[in-house]
Length: 120
Image 1: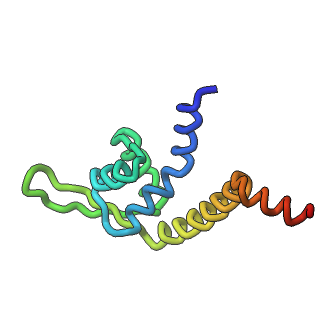
Image 2: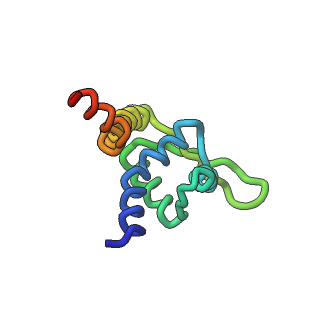
């Protein structure tokens, strides 16, 4: 088994949630999304982002508007729709449940405390 492959699969599993989290903070241009993800040490390539944005838009979770640019072609800014905001809340609840479950399973100190408490 290869740790890089496992880590990649883990990142893919939370990618939609992270992208929607960035857009939830306010209207976002794709390069801004990439920059925020990189700042969080979550490397994301344009070739991965654009198909996901299209899929989320086609699912009616995102909408976009064109904004004229002084330095090139118009830019497409994405924002959440009401349906997207509801989906985000579901993802957030799922993430919190999953993160808490993983923490409970992997928190060795807590397990040792519980074992000592239950077995005096």
